[in-house]
Image (cartoon, rainbow, N blue to C red; front, side, top):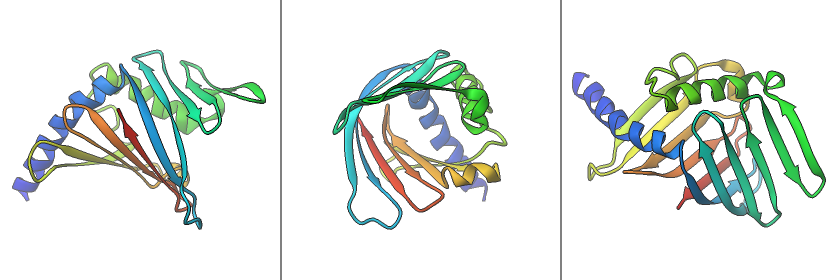
Length: 173
């Protein structure tokens, strides 16, 4: 048991710098989203820009241009219908995730305690890692059952499993 805990600690130590770097960088992405009950994935591509302490902007370039910006106090949705703003106060789970993500980015290694159960493993070759984040707050499980992040020196993949059985697979460049 001690060896398993030590291995998980080593894996988490490998993942943390890559995650902090990702939260202060820009990347291109490709996502395949499988909706619950559907066998055909929806594919989209775009960019993500993270500015530590300020926000994250997801921009969809294909198939339909749009964006979602999570700012300090709101989420701003832009698409062909215009721009809509939703205050974070109206989205308690997102507000809490953003607050804790900012704390993690600023160096607080325990920022996700009580919000997510973290399970980290090293790749068999020892060069990569996988971090599974499972919500500990029951109400959040409707949004997603699990987020799986993986990479090596940088974050390269994310898999989000939703409460209704959908799966989104994102690869970053």
